[in-house]
Amino acid sequence: MYLLPLYFQSVRGASPTGSGIHLLPFILAMTFSSIFAAGLITAVGMPYYVMAVSTVIATIGSGLTYTLDIDTPAGKWIGYLILLGVGYGAIIQLGIIVGQASSKAEDIPVATAAINCTRSSSDVTNI
Image 1 (tube, helix red, strand yellow):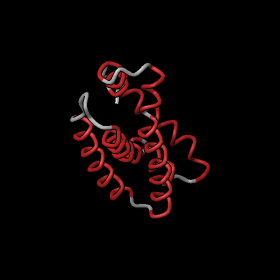
Image 2 (cartoon, rainbow, N blue to C red):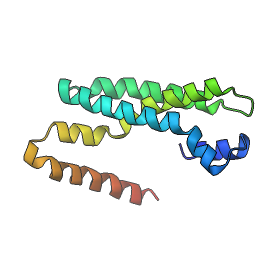
Image 3 (cartoon, rainbow, N blue to C red):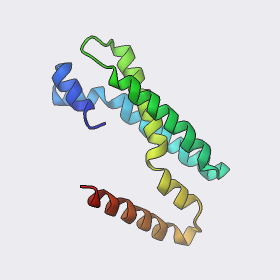
């Protein structure tokens, strides 16, 4: 995800603004799949299926994105970014979604804060 803007700017010759516009399929796919996953997990209560399917989709999308080069047609890279966004969007917020869906209404703020604190502290220790 970090290198996609650099790809569009360095390899494809896009401006920084153009690079951001090229990332819209990825961002929109992440947004909608995250919302869909949250609704599905809240309704069904089974995050395991979302976790397994989104991991497979994210892996396939990552592999396809790895094949991008200077001559890749727009239809392909847009499709690859949508696939990547669907996979990442469904799994990137999974911890928070499960924590909120499994908490009582009055405990949701505490659960969300605890999950975010744990995620942040593990990110800091990995630097």
